Image (tube, rainbow, N blue to C red; front, side, top):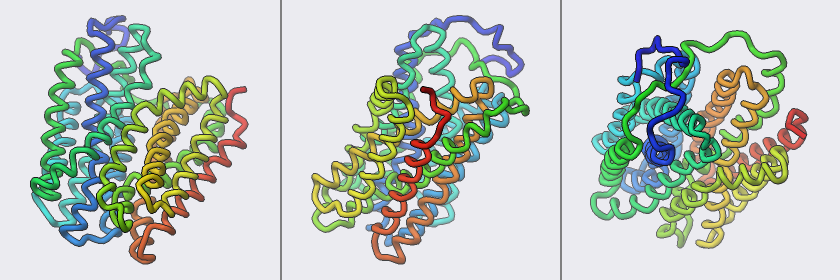
Length: 399
C-alpha cells in the first residue's frame, strides 16, 4: 500500500487485477476472518464443555468478549480510517486472527481464553473492513459492483467448512485438535487467498478522518433502523453462539449437532444475493420485515426442535436470514446517509455490536439458571420480532 498521505486522486482509476480473482481472494479472506476466526467457536464449544465441564455462563462470557473486541476494531476503523492503509496493520490483523485461533488449544485458563477471544474479535473486525473496502472498490472501478454481495458468502462458506471439519478433528485430538486444525486451515486459506487475489498496486481510498458534521436529518432517520439492527444483534447472536451446543444437548441429536452448523453455513453463503434480489422485487422494507419474521419463526422452532428435520430447518432459517438482514440494513443506512455513509456505518455497527455483547452473556446465565435454552430462545424471538415491527412501521424506506 501507499503512504497514508496518498490522495485518492493519485490512485489508478482501474485495477490491473482481475475483479473475479480479487472477489475470490476476498471470499477466502472472509472465511478466515469471520467464518473461522469469529464463528469456529460455535461448533468447538460443545467439545470444550464435554471435556472440561465449562458452564454456559462461561461460554457466553467468552463469546461476549469476542464481540467486545469486534466492536473495538470496528470503532477504530471508523474513528481512524487511515489505519486501513497501513500494511503492518493489515498483516498484523491477519496474523492475529490466525494465531488467536491456534493458541486457544494451548490453555484451559478462562482468563487466557477470554484474552484470545478479545484480541481475535478486534483482528477479525479490522480484517473484515479492510477486505470489504478493497474488494468493493476494485469491483466498482471495473464496473462489477453487482458482484459485491457475493463477497459475504465467504462467511457462510467458512461456517460450513468449520462445521464439517470440527467432527473429524475431534476424533483425532478432541477440542484441542479442533482449534489447531481450524488454525491450520486458516493459514492455508489465507495463503491461497493472497495468491488468488494477486499483489496490491494501490491503496484503499479512505479519508484520514471522519467528518464530525452529521448530514441533516441523517441520524434521526436512522433511529428505527438502527434500533431494529440492535435487536437483531441481540437475537441472532444467541443462536450463533449456542446453536450447536443446544442441539448437542438434545436427546438423540448429538450426532447431528455439528452438521447443523454446516446447514447454517450453506444457507448463509447465497443469502445476501437472494435477499438483495428479493428486495429489488418487493421492496426493501417488505424484504427486511420478512427476514426478521422468518428468523423469529426459526428461533421459536429451535425451542421445540427434537428431530434432525426440525433442527435442520431451524438452522437453515437462521443461516438464510442473518446475513441478509445485515446486508439489507447496512445498504439502507448508506442510502439514508449518502453524504455521511461512514458515520452511518459506524452507528449501525455500534448498535449491532452492543446487541452482540449483551446477548451471549445473558443467554448463558439464563441457560444455567433454567437448565436449558428455552427461555433465552424465547427472549431472542421476542426481541427479533420487535425488530420486525420497527422495520414494518419505519416510514424512511423508499417507496
